[in-house]
Length: 145
Image (cartoon, rainbow, N blue to C red):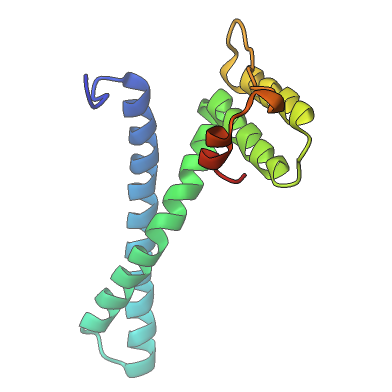
């Protein structure tokens, strides 16, 4: 329970991602091996399998693993976990708007809107300390935005 091993959503998600990724990479690997062997046979006339072909195919699969995993994860999130996907897009858009905002009231309104949209709580409130009540110690420990 501690590591969410019995969480069925995580199990289904990982099964879909890694099952389809394994199938796709296996097809590409065998396609590379047979394709490069046919090319090697056409160029040199030898029938024997070259160890270089297996090494090249393995390197191609190693290079494709992470980009394919990310693409498959995005596709599965988009189709099966739409709420999670939309929340991630909303948070990314909000973080992009944070860079140009300096007005605290407008920023607070947008923050409350993003929290409502992504987490959908029953109640949201934002408490801010007025500038006249901030002490020198509060300002000293505040990190820049």
